[in-house]
Image (tube, rainbow, N blue to C red; front, side):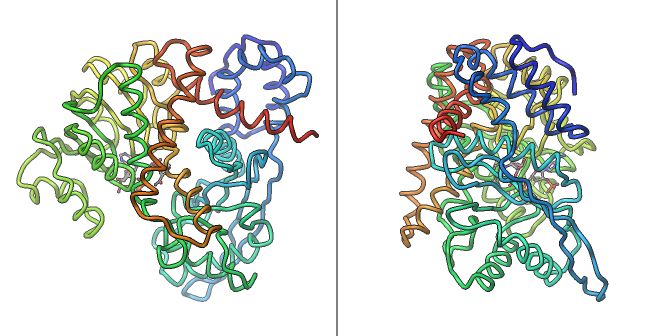
Length: 455
Ligand code: NDP
């Protein structure tokens, strides 16, 4: 983490105290530092926050739970993993955030994700607090029954900490519909109740239509509004590169194309394809959603385009010339070199579908070079927003149509944009800096709710 100078004594002091209290938690510290830098000027204009120790209170999770998860593999061997749930902030609603199953999961990562989630959920305008959880369990190579046994054991502890009005987890890396289903089944068995305690459920037991499309579609709704207001243009007639070819990338491609753009590149962790005529999305869906194949299969199946092997997975695609870039693969996929390549090729907007795809140096480079920059915490909030809509449908015991959910998603994303934009106008570096606005907009609502609720 690079050391930065804060402009206000209050933020500097809070960050020093934070580092002393949270040693050896680099991901958590980097997130806290970034947020403090964005909001310190706004906080300085509102002395009540310092008087009420709001920053200190905000940067302390309400609860952090760590537990052991013991299960048996298919050979009958005992396996021991670690489970986590960080209930970061409940000022504006029940804790809400995904569960991640990946060997890299640790306390620092879960707290960092819980903090970011708190601001993202606040931006959605829905009544959702922030949380995150997971385990260092690696689902890769495990049988279906092993996954089920692990999920049941995980929920056998987690169930006592969550509930539809307390904490509503969802999926994240390594946790999809299958895992959510197994965890929901175990919760129902233990509690003997069928409630909306998890989101991302199957459509037959309380899931929401349009959840699959939500993050990619939401990204494009946000980007379209930003293009209109800040650059007086739109997707229409623009060329677009999108990294990844998973859930977010596929539905961002679909919506960008519907809005009149031509998506010319997609990737996976082995390489990328370029099709100057416009990607045939039905071919990509067949490869990725049905056959679970690789993006290089596109050229043979579509009968056009070019494939480029890319050992780094996410480097080459950023050298393709296009008007708009939507990173939708993974974290840190755009470093300073890639940002320079995009700017040199005349990119006008970079909006993030993945979580934290641009490094801090890349973000700064975009903003300083007048590239419209849509930060992940705002631009990809459509996924969690639609999870919030799933909670509403579960509470009502109703299922809304695809069109109803999609319309609400659209309105939420447009609102998120204006929230970022208005706050950035006052405190951002320039009109392309929507990151400052996203952090202030998210923080403001949580801070006011915390103040109103007393100590
Ligand atoms: P998927 O697993 O469906 O797809 C991820 C895609 O990214 C795959 O095509 C994968 O390729 C590719 N990828 C992974 N690592 C690299 C790499 N190093 N270089 C190039 N490509 C890579 O995930 P999602 O689409 O659901 O999620 C993508 C991102 O969006 C993640 O950051 C996620 O946290 C974020 N996000 C997702 C939400 C959702 O609702 N799904 C909500 C909010 C954020 P390969 O097949 O080779 O691994």
